[in-house]
Length: 227
Image (cartoon, rainbow, N blue to C red):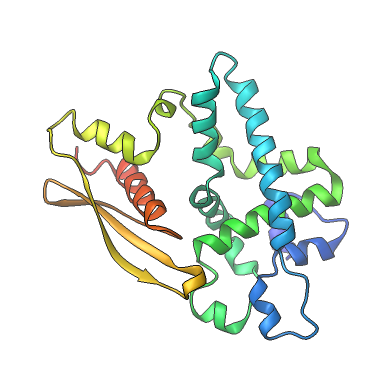
């Protein structure tokens, strides 16, 4: 866990908070007495992240009205968005989970990663307060914050942006297809592809069909493969 603290440039005063933030609920099936899992910290961290990002956007874009700011915030604090950040900082390798969860891909599962990142920020908030949580969060979100563009917020989401771009080229709209559905009933992972002009533009996964389609559209936007 010391390596994770180095990545975050933050050292916990209370290491038990870090352990709790990294503890997946599945541990209760193998460890007795059951350790505290990260669900309560996730609940707290969700609010901390939303507050910090809201404050950042409010100050960064003083001329923008509520609508675009809300959409910009959603692009950052969504579960898929947070999972990407968690993947970038290698959070999955530090998660404490049952052998069964780990063997079924739990360390790379988007829902686990997003939840753990939220729990981590909740733990930092409890450990030393909001200022520390703000410093850590803005550091790990630096790539996302650096490229924020209010013009993109005028489109509801990645699917809308992709359709807008492609329909400037031809009237044909992109289509989405569910290609796989895996995981237990309480934690399904859906994978979708977006196609256009007979070509696959992007693939995405998430805890719902809607999220998977949005992630596929995001991948297409990042690749620019239609150009």
